[in-house]
Length: 72
Image 1 (cartoon, rainbow, N blue to C red):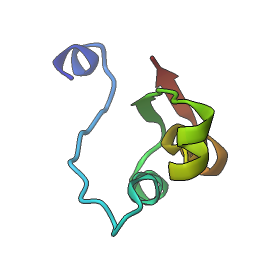
Image 2: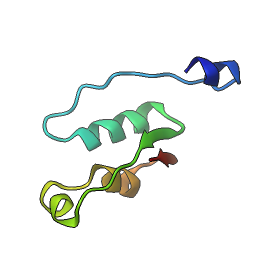
Image 3: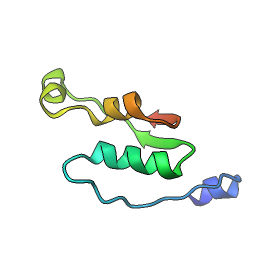
Image 4: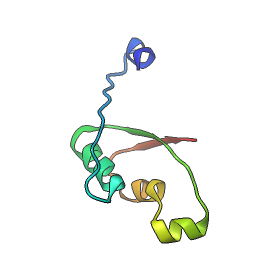
């Protein structure tokens, strides 16, 4: 974070407490309220696992109301 601030980026970091069993909605709600850009890591799993449990990264990409930068 220090490096980004040194280059003039007004960044903030905040620890979020998940809403019930829906961590993707927690992140999306915080981004809607406070962010101009969401930066996150993106990871994939097997199709079966994502079909059963859902895909966090896919949901964020589908439903984000702010730009999303993903790095793996």
